[in-house]
Image 1 (tube, rainbow, N blue to C red):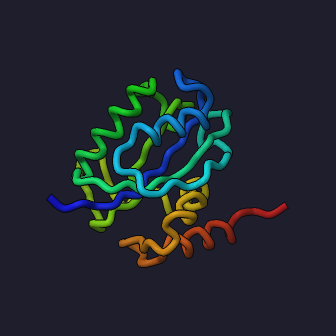
Image 2: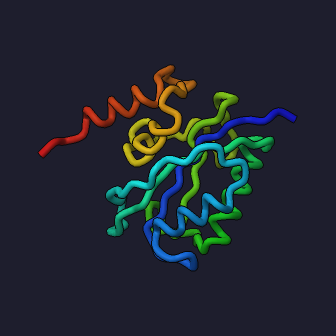
Length: 158
């Protein structure tokens, strides 16, 4: 079986059994297998209806799992942390998303890799650039560093 590298975005904005959002992220990283790089945790404004700020990071993991099998494992970790199905973009104890895969692109029921929205999300690209700045998006051909620069440049300034 071939080992692949995955970039996983991690977010939390609600207390859970492990404590506040930053503690939930640290515990989630410990629950993942094959972690090879961890970005610093950052704070970010919520998307959608949630009013709580998020703690976010990104990790690289090495795994023999296919993208759908890894998604199943990530969803099991989210559930173990108390994630409940519900409103899109609502508050959550833990959110684990496959952002990139060393195998390129994947599309199937419930999963698209690269993550459909990662190119516009500073809370994903900011941490990811710290651990995988040279990783190329297989769709646009741009590096994570370049994508982050584009998002950063588009951000409104005071």
